[in-house]
Amino acid sequence: MLTTGVDDFHDRVSDPAHVGTVQFVHGGQPAEHPRRHVLDVDAAMEIVLAFLRERRVSRLSAGWEKQDAFPPA
Image (cartoon, rainbow, N blue to C red):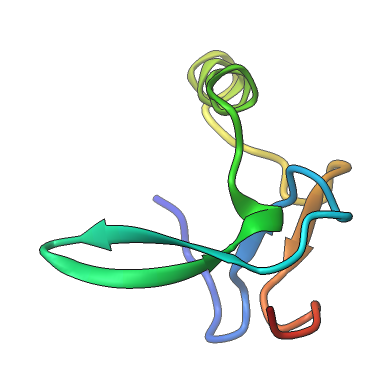
């Protein structure tokens, strides 16, 4: 079980130099996401495999940032 607080959400940063947004469709609704948070398949798989091995993801590791800790896209 993972318990988080209201302000306890983190996003993985693929490249801090990426600017702008990219659109994805979630449940039939378009949503804009910062390009800096779009990972390639290899990076995403690395996170998934680490989670399966360790049963947790360390949000304090390099490459994670707390939501609202970055400028708007």
